[in-house]
Amino acid sequence: MLTSDLYPERHALAARFGLHHPIHAGSEDVVERVFAETEGRGADAVVLAVGGNGLIKTAMDAVRPGGRVMLFAQTQHGEAPFDPGAVCMDEKTLLGSYSSNFDILDEVTDLVFGGYRNGFDLTQLISHRFPLQQAVAAIEIASHPKADSMKIMIEPAQGAGAD
Image (tube, rainbow, N blue to C red; front, side, top):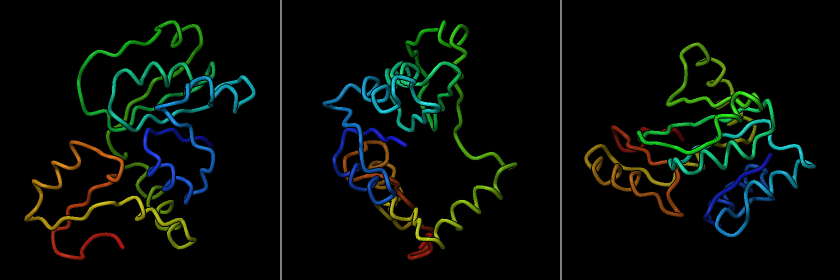
């Protein structure tokens, strides 16, 4: 499994989850590195979990023929350049998702809480916690991500979040 990011702080966090050979997106060619790590094959699947329509082409280029690219939480409308021949001739699949599907809620719950019980603590991804009264400040941070901002949580009551 590979991970890519601009920020060394996020690479350090990924290492705590077992991802020890990050791709430094600011200084490395992501597609070239993916092909090098997969013996020229390309990734089976790519999850693009950051806004940025220009990154869709990178993700589509990094995935193998027959592979899948998931745009997770792409929240801005706009135009994105990518090769439509990759979808038809290379049979690459471009999917989108904003949130979890109710049909897989039990599976996701088992993954999160089962992992937590076995040392896979996803609460480490929460970088900021705000009380409901500071929701505007939380949204401001979430709207302008930085190296130290991962998941921003607004708690309806102090300490009511996942711990």
